[in-house]
Amino acid sequence: MSGADLRLEGIGKRYGQVAAVRPLDLVVPGGALVTLLGPSGCGKTTLLRLVAGLEQPDQGRILLGGRDVTTLSAGERDVSMVFQSYALFPHLTVLDNVGYGLVSRGVKRAEARRRAEATLETVGLAGYGARLPAELSGGQQQRVAVARALVLEPEVLLFDEPLSNLDTRLRRTMREEIRALQQRLGLTVLYVTHDQAEAMAVSDLVVVMHNAGIAQSGTPRQLYEQPDSVFVASFMGDANPVRAEVASVAGGQAQVRLGGLMLTLPARGCGPGQADLVIRPEAIRRVATGGLPARVRRASYMGSHAEYVLESDFGPLLAVVPGYAALHPAGSMVAFDIDTAGAVLMAQGKGEER
Image (cartoon, rainbow, N blue to C red):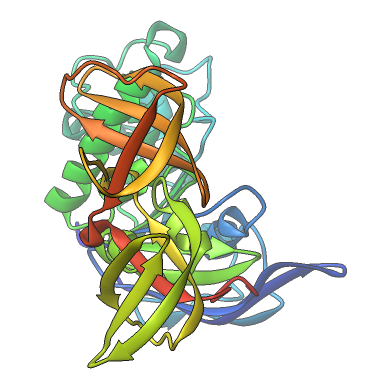
């Protein structure tokens, strides 16, 4: 099994006066896992349904392996979808659930059974074929849903919030299994989630959506370390957006004044004057002398690290401190500086018009 490339060209969808997906271009390379990440209502599930053939676009083209499938029905496209609700038939056994799509396509029952058993083994459920869905755990039901999609050997596999019904520990296990399966079989996957940790864990590329369009796309590392806007920075992990002043720019480097600190950062197109500065929580470091003053509003022990909410001259700041040192109590004063590796400068308001 190997996946085909998926290409969206100027694809758009409206419901009356509301733009569900503003015209956009997107390429999912064959054998890659690309995640659509964004808040509720940003257009990511609508875009997935357009690819699946469950909705028809108002404009643009959908190309699958170079073939134009824009006007084809869902059954005529070589894609399979794993739904958030699993959508298993409760009265059918696991084996019959997995083989249902094959039988519906006219595959003989004996052949459908053989392929369904082989696919259950692929997802780690060999021997579970005689059970009913109600006799399985949430994670096992999710594997059945994946097996039902895989058995059809689609060119593209679609996931719509597949782990949202699972608890935190099981989500971590299942996302690792989905990623390992995708890489082992060379599947082309378009994956929808609103969970940035999930997106970073499974993706080759992440497409951050905002206001029915694409805010930015790139590898998880690119989006985390080089966001184009405060929105993307805030959606790709915890972030502290503050206003700072660019004192000067030379050789692509900016001298940035933040209170009593002067930071040297990549200018990223900024000139002298006000700018947005995004500070990652792990980049806020307590110092014994100097630094910027702040009062501890809240301190939380998290096991491997401590989390602080600090009251500063720039507003509240979230700080993450590794280690097991005693907590600074609420109300105490601390001093901090900024690790420039975790600070990103961007032009004031850049990308927020999206």
